Image 1 (cartoon, rainbow, N blue to C red):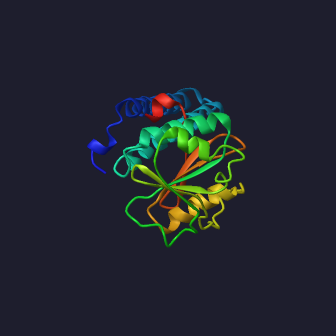
Image 2: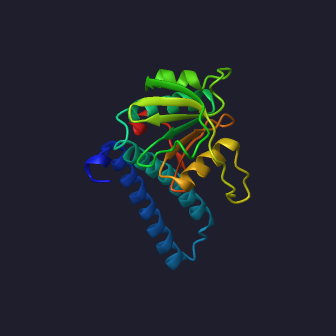
Image 3: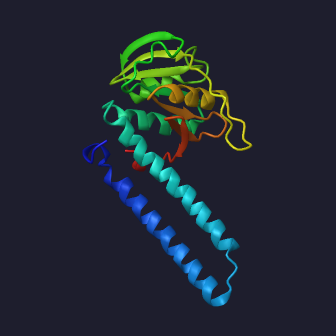
Length: 208
C-alpha cells in the first residue's frame, strides 16, 4: 500500500498523538522509578489502557488503508458498521481483494446490487432471512448474502470465539480477504486479515 492509499490524516494524527502520550508516560515512569523507587503498578495499568486505545486507533487507520484500494465504498462500509455497532446487530462482511473467493465459501443468495450503507444495514437487521451469514463485497457491489465461511480452530487466550469471529479468521487464514465482524452481544467491531483479528474504534469521525 502506498502513501496515497493511506492518506487518512485526522486518524493518523490522533494515533501519533496517542503514541507520543504513551512514550511520555513510559519515560516519566522510568524516571520516577530511578529516583524515588516509585511503585509502577498503577502506571503500568494506565499505560496498558492507553496501548489498547492506540491499538484500536491503529486498526481503524489500517482498515481504511486495506479497504481503499479494493472498494470505493469504504465510507459506506464504515458508516454501516458504525450503525450496526450502535444497535448491536451482528454482522459479517467479506471484502474480496485479489483472491477470488468463490471456491472458498459456500455460496448464499445472489444480490448483485450497488453497495450502500442502508442496504448493508437492512441485510443484517434481526429477522431478515439473509442476516445469518456473510455478505460478500466485490468492488462497489454487494455480490451475495448469507454465505457460509470456513471456521478457524484458533483459540485466543482463554476466550472462546463466537461463530462469526471464527468464520472471519477462517477465511482470512486461507485468502487475502478482509472480513469485518460486529458482535451482536457487545456491539464491538473487529476485522480479520492475514489470520489476525483486530478490534477497531467505531467513532464515525475516526472511521472516515
